[in-house]
Length: 119
Image 1 (cartoon, one colour):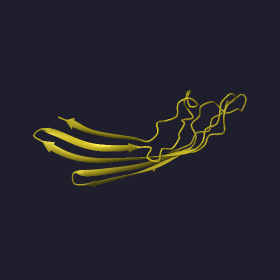
Image 2 (image 1 turned 90 degrees about the vertical axis):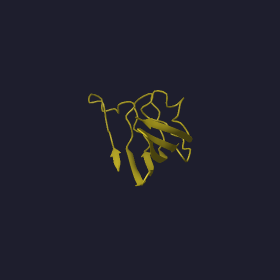
Image 3 (image 1 turned 45 degrees about the vertical axis):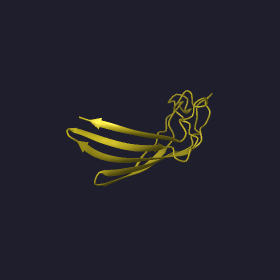
């Protein structure tokens, strides 16, 4: 479990400071059985409507990510074959701290497959 919350204001005017991240909560699960492992991560970012002048509010969103991994060894090389899924429910997410939040949201649903070698 994890979480954070920031509330910042200009000490002279009492106005909210710009691009302050909203409250965030998250949790993850890791599971391992022999050479197989799995990870599930869920992160929720609350809406941010306490904004500075000339700044737009952002909506809340929840991102769900998963990773499956198989580890094996050949001679002196350790291998990981994996598949990773990000933003599984294809949520529209905009990072309040970004200067480009109105133009460029965070990536939508994506999958990645790969093999990694450590020697």
